[in-house]
Length: 461
Image (cartoon, rainbow, N blue to C red):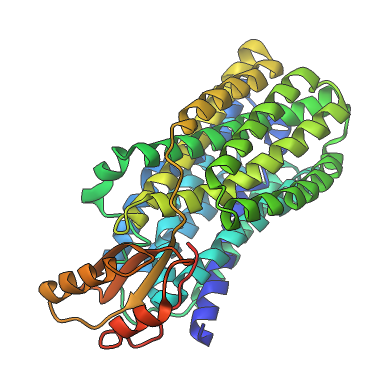
């Protein structure tokens, strides 16, 4: 990667991390701290924690499309300002309804799609996946840090202080955008990173993509609902002070990551992706059943949480890979856009359903509901076709017309190891799905020598 590409990847990763830290930090403490707000009920607390997901799901695709027209940085800046404004509204709130409004305003700063599009603008095709991987890692790091930092900061600063911290993180993100992230030379559409509105129906009617979208919806529904109930269980039954919740989360998160890594290697390197994917769903089901039965005991909670986070972290790593391998070569960006929207819808449904269940049936009902939903997800996912062992490869090509592009694509498809190929003359890009174990790079390079300016480098999606 060039220095400019590295700056872009680091800067955009920091922006994403700051934003996700702000969203995730309240998760492990919100149900404890918001319960004392004027007008608070379990149902309204659940609505408050999930409200950002509704506006995020509603606006992230439109904001991404808007960035094509008025500029990436303009949209991202506006989104970060909205996010900061929502944080201030929630920080100054005196009642639960104002917090709900602030959370919804936070979610309206839906810049995920615009950030991915800017990353595509600022990186060459054969290095783009590295930048996307850095952004993905920043999200995982932000989640792990927030689970530990949230209870400590919540104890020191209170709910208002947490939201002020979130506003400050949004401000830092805006500063990084304006001072670190380079300005793109050109803005153009990237079908590997952006949504094609006319093709959304193709994604929604694709059986295996639909299974994966349902999966990410379930996963974030379960996460949000669980962390409405779990902090209350740790406080009421285990009698652990709020800031000491971090003492539970820290070792659990560390161990779960250690257990997750070998399973990811088995899934990708040994080509056991579907089996490991189903195992991860089963771990979530076991964890939720364990929480339902042992949420009154500290050690029961800790063991169930270890199982839960092992499955959760594994699924967070595998689901994007499954989307990439399953989506048609020209629909990866569209598939990821629908996938992200499904994730945010899941967060909204998790907040509303979890709050309703706590208010009407108690904490145990939340865990049994999540356990049943996970079993339904497992059955739904079992019908998925085993994903092909493919990676994405993007190449810059110089072609003059559609006829030449189609001719090149046909030749590419005949190469051993090339599963799919699409050449887009307007973008000057060849989109391929390849089996790295079968692909002959020298043969591919020879075929493309008249069209490519750089040597092709296969990269994992």
